[in-house]
Image 1: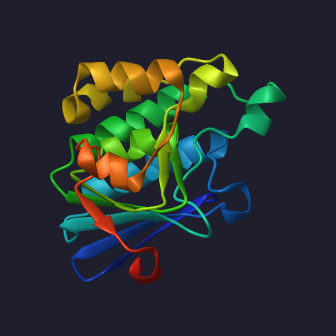
Image 2: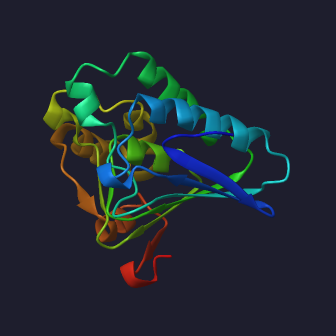
Length: 185
């Protein structure tokens, strides 16, 4: 499988999906949405893999949609369809999906985490749905978010666009495990 914005490899029964646009905090462009869709299908269809760890390379997990590509009008509508389809495939997968977040988990990055079974983050990790600050709708993450933190908190995060750190995310049930930055790996 050839992916441009991420990599997938297996080691025994464990798969590793690594977002790999570190120079842009793993912000996902149109190719990233296509890659996520392809990776999700591979994960779903891989009979030997039972557990998948999803993480980002560099200083962040994922800063969401690539705002430069979006501002330049280079993000086709199919981006959203591909991204959401990939998330649904992962969410419905029989595999155990663990999301390990550090740096930023914003917008689509948080949406990806919400599609996983188990979420871990560093205390300093910034999680949020800042789309409203850009004048755009935060996507299907708004539908998944209330399942974990309740409707009121989900509305606040969606409508304010404010981020919360890993400690607060753990306190409200958005993440399942908090990890130290120096022992993250």
